Image 1 (tube, one colour):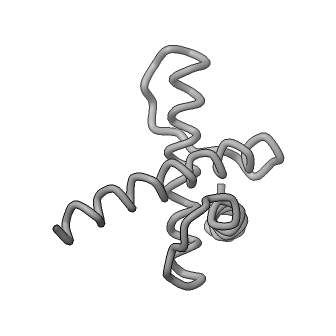
Image 2 (cartoon, rainbow, N blue to C red):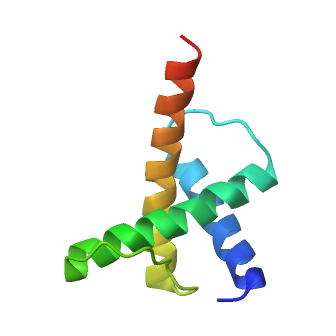
Image 3 (cartoon, rainbow, N blue to C red):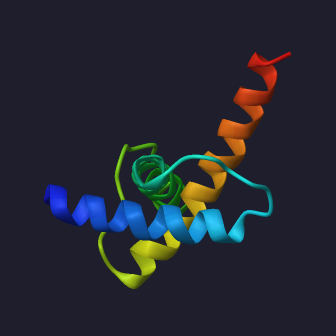
Length: 90
């Protein structure tokens, strides 16, 4: 997938995940994009693990099912980021 598709998928998945997740997350458009791209990798890898049983670093594609998997991965990434950020501030 080319870099423009990564940016579009990351922006869409990150924005949808931030809208779904109940707490406030700071950051602008760049952090939303990075969060979505991380979510695409996380969701794609988890989906491949559940489907095939092998742990392979893959990313979701730019499609409706890929967007859904990316949003789920971005929600997981938001949660993990909040857990790590709260531990470091204590």
